[in-house]
Length: 234
Image (cartoon, rainbow, N blue to C red; front, top):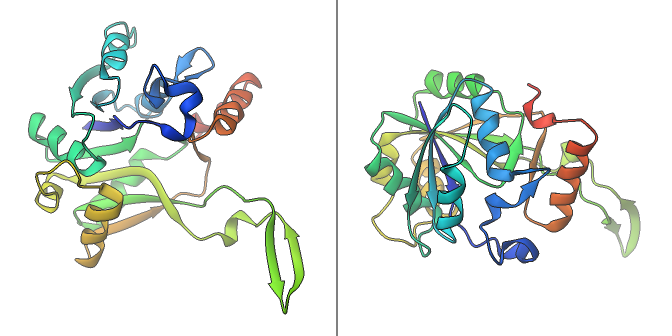
């Protein structure tokens, strides 16, 4: 089963690192974030990858030629202007399969991929999304009649569920994705699937962390430097 990795965005929220490389190529330790994402899948036996590139595609292409791991890696330059939905459709057209794992090139989590796949197959829907709790937020105010009743950290468990970015998609999802570069998976495709009852959630209670900012990059590096690799511990 192939894994599509969306790695073509501009990475504007971490522009300190992305002037000369795409965000998935930002180093965490001595390896790109993209390598760490791929290793989550490879450690669980899924070693066939399609990397959907765009911004600074040549950086990923050059790096992929030097990968020493026994992985099967295909690069598809889906264009700088393409949005996430269009990138998925282009990958499915170029590399036809019945179903795919799909993920982003900028988030790490110890997602049990076989459990995710079991949930998907059991429900027999077009798409399954991994639902995660957002990281706890600081400086949250609870106010009653202009009086602050709570100031501090919001409990992660009370924050609801958000898209954790680890998906299983049937090939039929392509029929939900118009052939244009502006189709955004999160804003367009997935809401259509939800309206049609074709989107299932697999709840993930373990480690999950995006890397959207320099602060989050530093936090991931600190974890790695401490000897912890929580995104590989199922």
